[in-house]
Length: 226
Image (cartoon, rainbow, N blue to C red; front, side):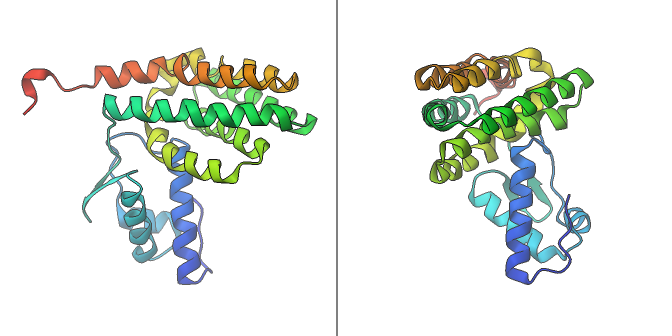
């Protein structure tokens, strides 16, 4: 975690919130993980106040569950919620890919290819943390290339909730977690909006099958439901 020892209170709270958002989207936490305010304060080199402020914002974002200062957790995701977020991502990330295909430069393509090479290395090394970070970077390159900052901000909130779940499924998903990124890049090279949109949708739906399967396996048995 980064440290922010010299910022004023408002800037510090904003910086801590941003860093925790990045950590969630990049899969540095997994479902059911418990967040401890004092431990986070030590990691960030701050007092507990900006950590508590950031935690409350994340609870408002529905990215964490704040039951009490001693019981703050990364939530598990229900199947219905996963399917809803997935349906929204299909539309929004499809738009990002479609627009990116019209705007992508040689430098943009090279940046995506670099992410893919590094992701291949992370998967080969069994590095879940690096792999999930690079996966998130690939997806967020698309609205950046497209020049759609409002869309990027909307996706950030969805990924706050999705990041821990993707991280929990990443190594088990194997090649499915990266294979569909290659057609996205090829479509951008051809400046083919329809193919780019279809490729990212395939990544979310087909590449995301291991994630859905994990959510389905974690469902509570009917006999245990109230």
